[in-house]
Length: 296
Image (tube, rainbow, N blue to C red; front, side):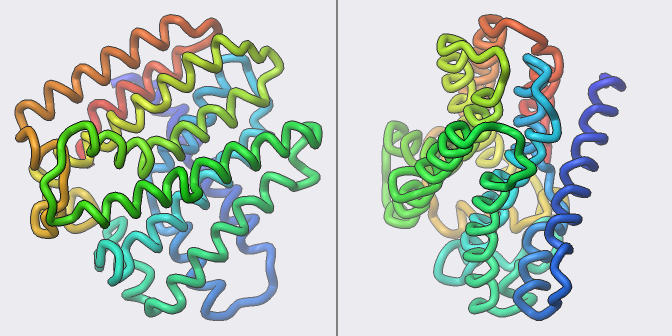
């Protein structure tokens, strides 16, 4: 257990949660859609993507006030994707973060609208006058994020995932699905964080991009293993659902033992890439260790 890293993690989870809560509650209007949106965004979560943005920022001591806006936009997009993912016509999951999913609490129509509202809100953060970077960099951020979540990115991955339910697929197609569905947003988070660094180097950006996609794979294969081996109470969502829905995962194709070996391989490849990145990577290293060891 690393007490310094645990303190860093707790303080930055608290930082992004306070930032999101403050920005979301700025409106004096309170109605069903505002309640559903707040419910989808603020009810727990590991904030892993936000932590990753701050950890990348630690490499060159990037201004954390600017990182807040990027972290918020990524976490909001993630919340939107989960809200839509849980819907009856998608994964049909009644449980999210240990609580009823947004559509269970507010109905499917309000959950769809909450997701739509969150998606647009994410881009508001990237054009905020309080995000103190030049307009060209803001355009870059918007471009990175929109490409990551669109019909060639996260949405495409979700579509492929649905199309391949109840079908036998190979590892190559599974990796494509997971790269798009999970990896693209993680890649955008890392790229956006590093892109506003005062010490930007294209070669470092390339290694961070490789690291980000591998992190996406590490995160997803861990989810696959936990879905098969953990409980709903521990995960905060329905366990065993991949098998029940006949979804292709590393575990369904290779089994738990081989999946754990592949997971270990991803981890060591990531650690090798971190060594190629100049600057303060101590926090990033600890975060990667935490992601590898997570059990929920």
